[in-house]
Structure formats: structure tokens, C-alpha cells
Amino acid sequence: MTYVILVVQPLLSAVYIDHIWPKERISQIVVYTIGRRKVNREILKMLPTCMRRLNSKAFNKLAALLQASYSTETATFETEPFKLHKLDDGPSTTVSLTKPDALDMFTKMQTIRYMETCIGDLLLNEKVIRGFCHLYIGQEAVCVGIKAALRPNDSAITAYRAHGWTYTMGVPVLGILAELVARESGCTRGKGGSMHMYSDRFYGGNGIVGAQVPLGVGIALAAQYQGIDAVCVTLYGDGASNQGQVFEAYNMAKLLNIPCIFVCENNGYGMGTSCKRSSASTTYYSRGDYIPGIWVDGMDVLAVREAARYAVNHCSSGKGPILLETATYRYSGHSANEVTTSYRTPEEIQEVRRKRDPITSFERKILDAKLVTFKELKKIKTDVKELVDDAVTKAKAGKEIPVEDISADIYAKNLEGNIRGRVQTEMLEHRRIGVAVNFG
Image (cartoon, rainbow, N blue to C red; front, side):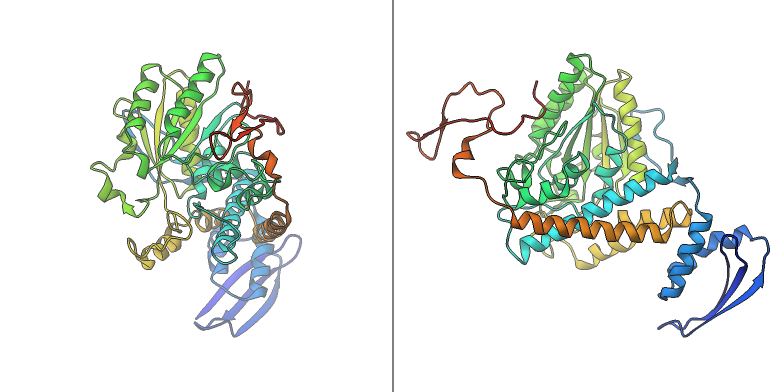
């Protein structure tokens, strides 16, 4: 098979690259210099896709040079249509993206993916992490897309699949990894573990199924009561969607027109049960009944961002709550050490990875649009690996808190006196060591 590709480098001559590419490998590359000339833009549009089909280091370098020469600062994309409930119009399916935002989103999703991959290794192979550990691999576009739409005063609260959200809400990788291995440098000094992580305007990480939903309504109510223009993103999974407290929270939020954005992260499975087997209605975006809802492709970070922007504007304009269903997918088990083949096939997972993966699909988009270069993304991947690997080393080398600190920082304002220990007669002193977040 023969390809003829036109390549133009800045301030240099154009070149034709004629190469013969058998199925197994590239066998020959010949470069001819032909002098300066104008570039056919239609050929340039086709080029990045052709380049990515090659395995040659030389061609990767040429692709990077070309994309660097013709990268733009803003690009426009089309998303999958949104599905609406009790809304006359919804988010735009035509979205624009700047280069800085593209690099920022890619960096965050790549960081979460590699961090979670390392967490899985620490849990399963090294057995450094103890207890339950719920990985976010595959769902990165949800937290990154929503966070891109939030304002400084906005808050978020989620369930126990919280590592990705913890990172996007401001906790560094080391703070997450150290927390998972119960070290003092963890974001809750090693006492919270996988399910209980917090930061400024991020209320966790909650271990009880669905319990964070009424709490999220309360956080949004507090902002409304204080006259603060802020929303609370309240997240739960399809597995928690049938909880009675979820519907009670819907009712209260609508009665008082509380600025709460309910988000059902529908990854297809509640523990090991398909949503089709657990829910009589799987149109989760319409489950709020009297609350407007939007279905969004949760594997497309740009679609998620646009839906979140719409939701923030909806709540901030005094229209009350809104419900988003993000159709996403988790590659790992419900908990990381779970075997998933009892309820889904390996082929199903691989098909999602191949066709819908939130990171590789976003990478293709921004490269095809010449918004970023191959070289820039390669550097991000390298930097992310170094950052996370360094955090893993530091987390494992960290120290645990002393035993006397077990009863510290339970309350921001202690009204209980001493704290009960292992048995009723054992009383422990309560002390304040850390700074209380989200208090006062």
C-alpha cells in the first residue's frame, strides 16, 4: 500500500514523503525536497489521521512538526445530541475549545487514569492498600468536564468512588495516595481511606449508598440561605438511584427551588447488577419527575462540560434544581479486587475501550483539529507518569499518625468532651490538630 503525504515545515520547503507500508511494518521511507509551494488545506485535514496509523518514530516526529506548524488556538466540535426532560431547549451540541483548556482537560484525565492504575497495582499486587477501594477508571470525563464548568463558590459531594473527584477538587496526587496507604501526609491524615476524602468545597467521599444526596441538597440550601450565588453538584450512581432518600431529596430541592445539580453517574452496573435488571426505568435523567433533566454522553468531556455549564446557569437563575445523567462506564470492578466476569464479558470492556474511551477519543479530537501537537501530549504523559510515580514512592515511605491522634479532629467544634474509645469505659481526649475545612 502506498501513501503520498504532503508535509510543510515552517520557513522550510515542502516535502513529499513516499513510503511503502506492508501490514506488518513500514519497510521504506524516502523523502524528496521539492521547493516552496502553497499547501492544499484538504490534504492537511486528512494528514493527522494518516500519521497516527504509522508506527515509525520518524513519522511520529514528522507528524509532531506538522501539527506544531498548523495548530490553532480554538477549535469547534460536535457532541452527541442531549436528551431532555421538561426543558424546551438544552445545551448546545456545537462546542468550542481553547488550546489551554484542551491541555488542562487532557492533563487532568491522564493524571486520574494513571493514578488509578497505580492504585490498582498497589492494592492487588503489593497489597499496600487495605479495605475497599473503588476505582474511577473510565469515568474521568465526568469529573473533569463538570469541574471545568464550576465557579469558585460552587461545591461538590459524591459517593465512595471518589478519587477522581478528590483530585479535580484540589487535592494533590500525593494527598490521595498517602490517604489510601494510611499515611500522615494523606488529605485526612490517613484516617479516611479510599471512601472519605475532603477538601475546600468538596464534601467527600461518602460510604453509605445514597446518603450524600440529601447532604448535597443541604449544602446547596446553605448557600441559598446565606445569599451566596453557588450550586452544589450532588453525585450518585445508578445503583443508588432507587434509594428512597434520593426521591425525598428531589422533593425538598424542588419545593424550595434549591440550587442543586443532581448527577447520576450511570456506569451501567450497581455493584454486579446491570441497571436494566435493577431499575424499572433506566431513563435516570427523567427520574426527578418535576425536576428538569438532561442525558449526556459521559464519555465525552466536552459534552459533560456543556451540560454542566447549562445546569449551573439554570440553578443560578433561580429555576431550582436540575438532574444530569452521565452515561459512562467503569473498566474495573465495583471494588478494585472484584472479578467482573460473572456479570459482563471481557469483550464488552474491550469494545468500550476501543470505541468510547474518554481519554483516547478526546486525544483524537484535539489532534485532528490541530488544537494541540503530538509532542505536547507526549510531554504531558511523561510528566504525569513522573509526578504519580514520585507520589507513590513518597506515599509508601510516609509515616502513620501516632495512636493518640486517633481521637483528634473528629469535630470542628467539640461539644462532647472526651471521645469514647474501643469500649464504653475507655475515654480519649479530643484534640484539634488540622485546620477544619468547609466550616464556619
